[in-house]
Image 1 (tube, rainbow, N blue to C red):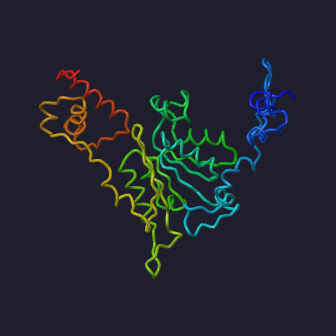
Image 2 (image 1 turned 180 degrees about the vertical axis):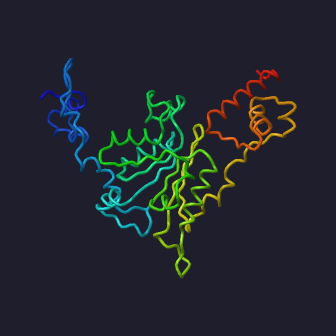
Image 3 (image 1 turned 90 degrees about the vertical axis):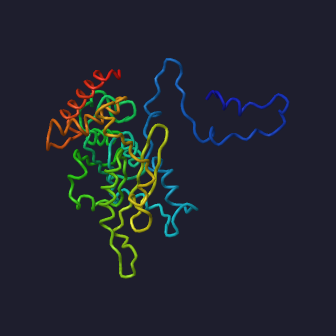
Length: 312
C-alpha cells in the first residue's frame, strides 16, 4: 500500500545515508495502522468497530494486576479483580449534577456494573452547559433517571438504578447494601447526613478494631468555579466529614437591622424575604427551596424590594 504521512517519513532513507541500516520505526506507527479513506469516500464500518472485551479493559487490567507504591499493603493484585468489581461491588452515587454526571460515566468505564444514583432535582436549562448527560429535550425530567438511562445507552453491560427522591426519604437499610458511597453534592447539610448514615453502620470487634464488613468508604468531591476537592473517608480509620467540617468557609451572615431597614444589595433583599418576610406572611409554614411556588414568592418579594430601595 502507499505510505503516507509519518510512515513515509520513517521509511524514506536519507539521501546521504543510503548504506545505513533502515531507521528504527516508532512502535506507535508500526503497532496501530488505521485505514485512511480517500477524499469523498466513507470510512468502512470495520474502522469504527467497537473494541473487543479484552481491549476495552486493557488499561484497567494493568492497574489491577500490578502492585504499586500508592496501594495499601494488603492489596493483592490479580486479573480477577475486575470480575469481582463488576459482579459484587455495588456503588451509590449521591447527586446527579455536574459532578454526579462525571462520576457515573467514570465508574461505568472503570468496570463497576452495579450502580445506583439518587437525586431529588429535575433538569433545568441552566444545567446544560456543564452536565453533559442532559439534552434540551430533557428539561423538566428527573436528573437521576435521565443520567442513568444515558450512561446505560453508551456503556454496555452496566446497570444503573435511579432514585428520584430526597436522601432522607430512604431507609437506613437502603444505604447498607452498598460497598462504596460516592458523593457529588453541593451542600454541607447533605454531606453531613450521608456521613452520619455511613458512620452509623460501623461496628468494632473485641479488640476495638473496625469490623471490615461494616465499613462504608465514602469518596467526597466538590467544585466551585475552577477549584475543587476530592477525598476518601473511611469510617473508623480516617477523620469523618464532621471531624473536618471546620475546613469549609463560614456562611455569610448579615445584620437583621440592615436587612429590614437599609438593604444595599440584592443579597440583602433575598435574605430579608427569606428570613423575615416569609414568616410574617406564612406564619408557621416552613420554607421549601425545592417548591417552585415558594421560590416564585421569594422572587416577587425580592424584585419589589429592589425597586423600593432603588438598588437596580
